[in-house]
Image 1 (cartoon, rainbow, N blue to C red):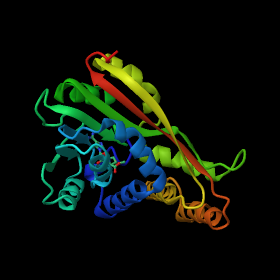
Image 2 (image 1 turned 45 degrees about the vertical axis):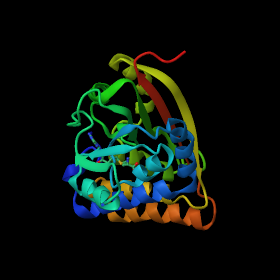
Image 3 (image 1 turned 90 degrees about the horizontal axis):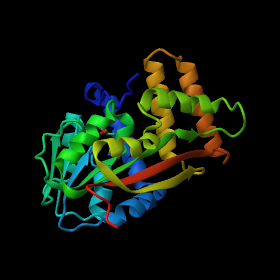
Image 4 (image 1 turned 90 degrees about the vertical axis):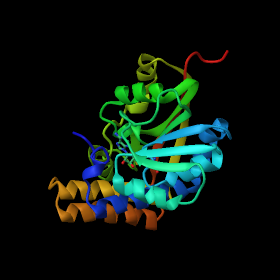
Length: 270
Ligand SMILES: C[S@@+](CC[C@H](N)C(=O)[O-])C[C@H]1O[C@@H](n2cnc3c(N)ncnc32)[C@H](O)[C@@H]1O
């Protein structure tokens, strides 16, 4: 089954607004900001042309501009609503533009970009191998690809064996993440596409007292299951209430490993 973000272009406005809010929340959390500083910092390239795949409303674009500081950035997304939001967010900023585009068919020139970044996008792709071939095509020889995403198969909110709240996490994966194991599969997919992997870094993400992004993720997953008639309103509200009860009494625990992979078009420098 494809996830909701895979079918982003067909989503109603209220769902897109909820996703945009969740992207803003995640990009502004101290934990995510420090993860981004760690993986994007070494990619600093003031003269670079950067292509951002799946830029959404521009929430992560802000972090890319802060740490990579490229001369120019083109952001593409399959959602016209998100492309408009991102264009408005960066209106008047020199060197920045946003357009409709697919990871598998970016509509960008070949051998043009120094750096291609896909920040929490590959877990939503139906055919990552085609997207990697497209990233390879648009990169200059020696250019780099940075893929960052959750290892969503590691998502847990369980406090004990058989914790019913963990089934909320399973429902989230079912509706919000098409490929929960993609970051485990990526190294071999990159090799097939002709990339040389430079680094694979894990980034621990544990949220307890202010798990704002995880709460939005659980809530969006539950709502999607409700809309699909898989579970009733009472259960949607029950999971939400239980997650919030744990935050209020300081027993909430949510954990997810993010992974960044940097790969080069061409041989890895010795
Ligand atoms: C989880 S959001 C991440 C957005 C942004 N990178 C961020 O981290 O704030 C995933 C984004 O990928 C986009 N997307 C999904 N499938 C795509 C595809 N095949 N090609 C390009 N973008 C895609 C969605 O529209 C959405 O904006």
